[in-house]
Image 1 (cartoon, rainbow, N blue to C red):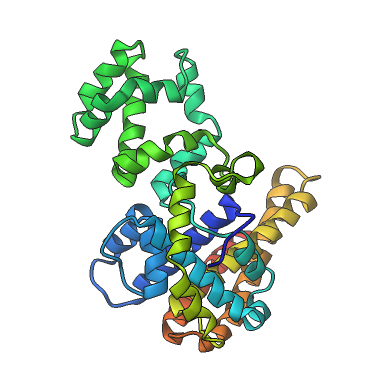
Image 2 (cartoon, rainbow, N blue to C red):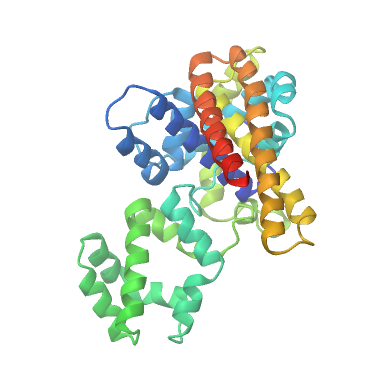
Length: 345
């Protein structure tokens, strides 16, 4: 069983977002009906478990959440990547090592589903805290005020009941309504059980590590995450034996495409980090043009690297399922480059 010692929540979410985009690219390139609805589900509604399961099995699971299986699936993917490290590193560079070292499940405290992620980032940046603080209370106080009755009212669509509950506690109707809208979206996407487990994490940094929640002072395991992780480890021997007995185990096509898109995004971020330093001394139109030139170069580098990554698809279990989403990403980037070039001319 592969245990991630130094997980980065930011890198984990970045990989999962890349996985969602990769699956959406596959849908977009297909002839399936109702593409928009399916892409909306993949980006906004599917749980991270549904995403990693689909990457590994190339079909959707029958359940929305299964944390033990989610841990095992991440472990299995990392084992496959490690076995094929040399060939993958040749095409995708240092991102392969980062994936092995820092990427893992983010359940239950975080999610890469777009609405939830946006809410978590907003809370991390204290946007909601600022709104509520004007009323003399914090986000956690609002959550406490909602209580079981308020949360049940929201899930049943009785927003007015929940708003009334908050106004009776002293919030202005405007802020109470905003609070209910936020909680409604969170409950809809995560479900009541996950909501209760993860609600406090909304005020934590997305760059934190789940390891801190699993191990207390002196390395002593604490809390529900530790017990669930222990179950996953106990269930893993058969998986470990199967993985290590296949020295040439290939990575699945869908999973390899997600890894390629993840490496591409990291390459773009490196370029734009250099842009911030190089263009920092400029201002106005000159700075804007400088940043756009870096962005154009970054996208060109992405196209080149993704083209190289496609060569690795031949080594996957299903080369076509690897090539299609990568080629779609390349096409999208090429269109973006053309539009940028026209604006800069």
